[in-house]
Length: 97
Image (cartoon, rainbow, N blue to C red):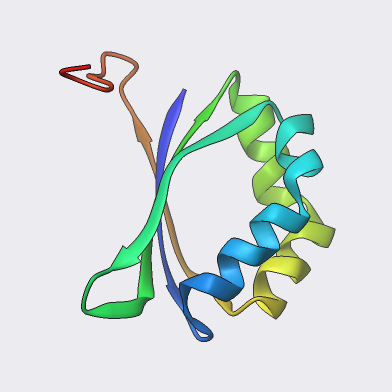
């Protein structure tokens, strides 16, 4: 399943990106993969992430992991602003390749 996450940050994108690298094994454990993550060109504290999870269970485990929530918050993620949108599996990826 594909998921789009939007979120506000307080410490800029680099802090969040560093946290993701430090928690790589957690994401792998949830069978998740980041397809794209980045901030807006004119606002380093507004972020969009496109992810893929093998199952809804993996997404929910990611979303509800207390340790990871704390790590995201410490990296500047304003978790109260998080919006998750489930996307269709009928997607266009890497076109044209």
